[in-house]
Image 1 (spheres, rainbow, N blue to C red):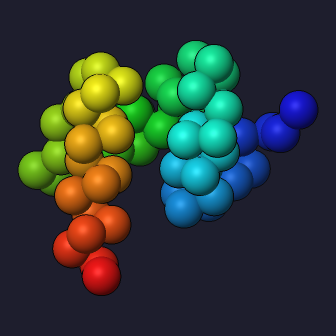
Image 2: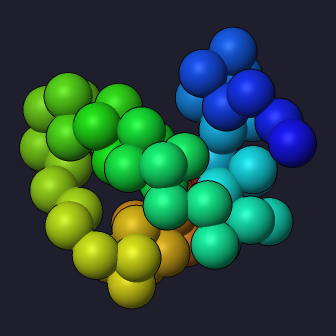
Length: 59
């Protein structure tokens, strides 16, 4: 099991995507995302949509 609290944001994002059953890691990632201005996600579907949007922006 990965200690998600020690992961940086990018590593944590990848962990959450790869381990959707880990609710605690997902909630931790959401708290990080919610702390950023202008980002609001409250469901796994919104998180996935936000991640896809950011990935497409970076490309």
